[in-house]
Amino acid sequence: MLRHLIGFAFFCATAAAPAFAEEDKAPEGVDWTLSGSAGWTHVDADGEQPFFRLGLTRTIGQGYVRGSVTYFDKTEAPGLLDTVPASTLQVSLAGGRSFGDVQVDGYASYGWRKFDPEAFRQRTGQMIEIDSDGTIAGAGLSLTYNATLGENLYLAPFVAGDINRIDIARAINVVGRGIISQKEKQTGETFSGGFTLDKGVGQRGSSIGVYAAFVTTTNSAVAIRSSAPVAAARLFGPQDVPGSNDSWVEYGGNATVALSEHFLLDFSAVRTAGFIGEDMTSFSGGARVRF
Image (tube, rainbow, N blue to C red; front, side, top):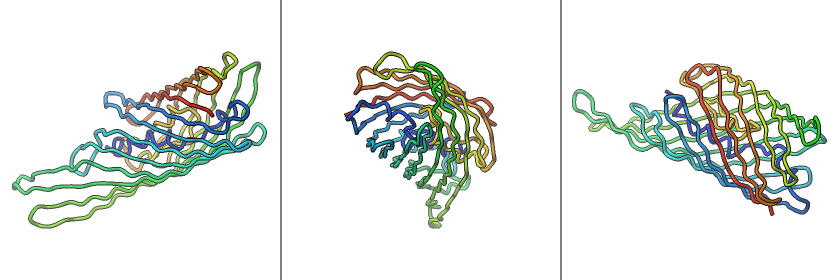
């Protein structure tokens, strides 16, 4: 049930995700990157959810800072009594720095979620009306080692951790009897380790790559991973079993098409294997303008 309650968190990741080495590829004298992206996660036999993001990155020496805003379009999510449409707006701040071949990235994010009202009529004929909204807060850290294996061939093993908290508040109006308030809180920690293997193509910064990782979480209802190195992997989130731990493997690929030194297109797709519930496939695509 909580898969869709926290479903928007599949996409929170893209709003706050670390840049890893992508800013290091910018041409000399280029300090800013404006990025936009969109994507969705498809849950096997259980629908999908889209997102849209806009971000601005400032490169400072061997490091960077990034602010971003993400909107998650309305999708079916479990309210108290039924599934109702819900939308989310999230802001985030990320930053990182390279120390030789080691890259350190971190982020913090906060978001607001609004559910459409829901109503339920009891067998006695009495109406119950419910208004729900919520917040989500998260933070994470990742360490990546960038190794050169050959000409334009790069291996980047990583380890990462995220902590997240989700709060939902509900005003339950029992018509004729008054309003009852209800709160729900979920917290959890998620850890992952894996690698990306990328091959540079051409002289402008185009590349293709593969990705694989192992992920484990203390609470599958709050398994939000903004620290994943591939955009599509950051779109995965919770499971149907609230409060339970879980582990899984994920794999996929990514590509960057550099139309020029200043304009690039990014694509990624990732598939899970081993979820307690249904597995998922995630897709992300976007553009970057460097100036």
